[in-house]
Image (cartoon, rainbow, N blue to C red; front, side, top):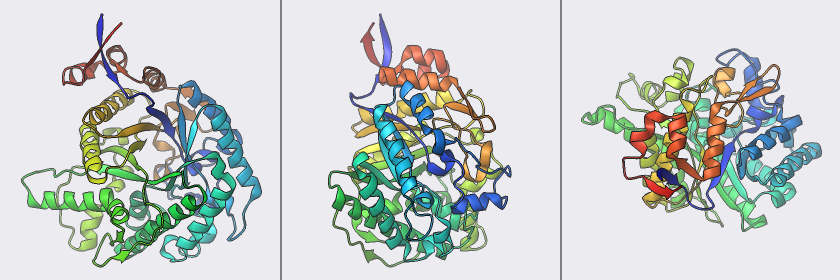
Length: 453
């Protein structure tokens, strides 16, 4: 009996993505912890224990291994490793060594991110990413990490979503330091690209075989009214600033400011990117609305993450087709292997998440069939974690977490993901069981591969 089947390539990488501040708990020495204490989060909560990974990450590593995964993406907390300027905490390094060893013991290859949004308080007091010295600080931090932990990881992300971090911290004022300044945005953006370049050279000098990139948040910015010139212009502007600016600067070897003119040559001894790390969540149709000034236009059009305050995630627009199209465009433009380093859906229950996972993986499958070199997928995230400005109101986990008791409960999507990983693909029977509304779309569009059972 023949059945439909979307087969992924042999050796495809299956994982989940996490971050230090959102998972470890009690990261009291960084700027976001301080920001939480001042009541800046949507629900007024603080991260607290988060998922208690600093004491018991291994229990969740067991859960990841039980899903059949072969990789896990996590980040290091700079404020733990360098709690005071120039002082390195041996105990913190040892804990991360334990965690990385635990991943290897479970057959989970670590992908390690050096900076996932948070900064040590000592750095924040020196103006953080606005201070030109931050590039040297970051290179020094990278050198310590590689020297002490580099034997346990060969797969690195320097920065997580610099575009989102810069947007939220320096334009939207929703993350620390809470600025609304195009000048600050541009200045910090320059320093982050320079920091990535410096970190790549440090890593390659120590371990030339290491694979290095940064995790880039991409979104489908399409004109709401394709016939409207204003909609097309603003969609193109956002696509350039959010999706391509940093990548183009690095690949071209010339740093151009996201706003304004001029350029500067990047001095690097190593290739700037070994692969593309793509974080994708959905689409943002653009409708031009003049804000009365340049900053007003930016506030209305660029700062779409502000919708997080009043629009539930589950009501936002998702677009598997947007992911497919962006993968094709990025492959054609950059010709680098691609990993989906984040993709996930937020809801307290699990009504829409299964269809989201299936439809987006089907889009990845279509891209691979079209010739795009996509080598892996990381779902965001394993267990519900603390979601920055949204606090505990936003839940992405395959496992539900009660922050008070730390009890984990698997959602149906955890079982779905386990089956996808086991099959290294998506069967028609799996779609029937978890998202029957997608059957006609997935198995009547040329994606069908038949397999005798």
